[in-house]
Image (cartoon, rainbow, N blue to C red):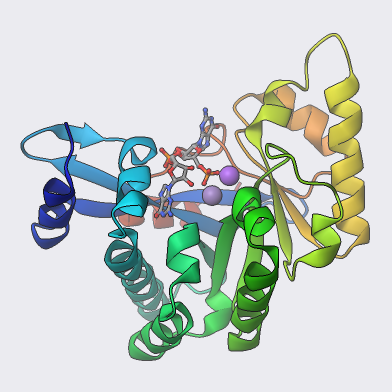
Length: 255
Ligand code: G
Ligand code: G
Ligand code: MN
Ligand code: NA
């Protein structure tokens, strides 16, 4: 149904836009970052989920120009917020494997940061476990290069793949985003998931990494996570991903 042509047209017709989901820090009760997520509203097809079109972008290599567009959009948004006086938080960007492995990736990152005139420290790059495991040597090199540029790196959807904990030792990452599957399973009778989740929280903390619990939807989950010493949370309980203007409104409110 969807073809590469639609995906290219969408870029030139401004049908893609970014939304931002806050990450809330339990230790200081502040929004310390936002995750940027792409959306596609097609006048012909309606709204299409990134779950559907991101794989198509990857298969057709269009993830490279679209990924570049995402980077630029986010960098410009960070600059805009900065000019409005909002700069006490970071913004995370999801990076696809093909985008990251592309030879121009680091140059693109560097030049987009320079063009937007933002500090690289404002950005976090999220990569998934699968990316890291499939291409561990190259992934390690690129993540390390990103760190040298001054951006932070995070491991997304942690715990869903089949990687071992040693990946946390191997990869130059500063943050672990725990997959929402763990949060969903927290309240099950059988407390195995809880024990594993506690282990992940403690290990990441002891390795000096920050942790984000994804998919927190209820206050019961929040209470459990507080008791486990979780640091940051993300999910519908705090906010859905929303457009930039609304996302910054949350920044103004005190929690
Ligand atoms: O935003 P949503 O939860 O619907 O995202 C679904 C999936 O699409 C997630 O796996 C998410 O990481 C991915 N995704 C959303 N936005 C982006 C983006 O800007 N770039 C990349 N590479 N993936 C994204
Ligand atoms: O793979 P990644 O973690 O980047 O995907 C983020 C996706 O998770 C986005 O599509 C976002 O819409 C979705 N998401 C964010 N918070 C929640 C939540 O509390 N519950 C559910 N079910 N999905 C969420
Ligand atoms: Mn993510
Ligand atoms: Na994730």
